[in-house]
Length: 168
Image (cartoon, rainbow, N blue to C red; front, side, top):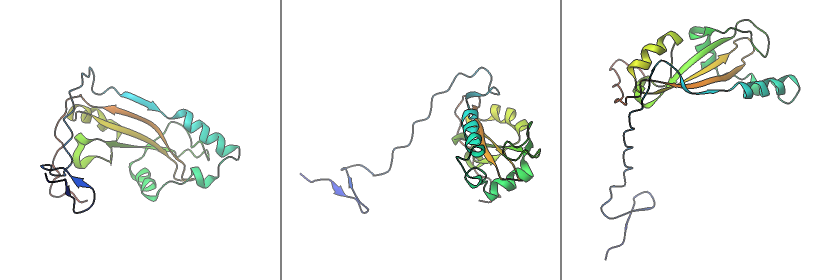
């Protein structure tokens, strides 16, 4: 009886197995009454409040919490939407929110910035995707994840193909 074959890299491959991971099974449709209504909402307000307490009472340095990446700052400059309150770290009135979308149903469009008024149309077009809302201050570089939630009509669809003119 022949033993298991050795893989070219490491480990073993059972006889008859290709060594490729099995594809993930398609998810079952989810019953969604209103695809534009956020579900599985997570507010990060308590974490934000604790971070601000550490910042104001010496438990954290400005460089620990006010460390926005240059790409996030550029996204905030060109795609940010005005926030309703000033920056919690420096009190600058120029605080903005940036909204990112992620999900397998989005295909090549996952990880992109979207305006909040685009989300209702997207929620009818895609089965399920996650939305991340980040607040950013361009003056002091404060940034914090405010809210995450899921939108979509619950019907799984194949991801759209990348257009030929899409630059990576």
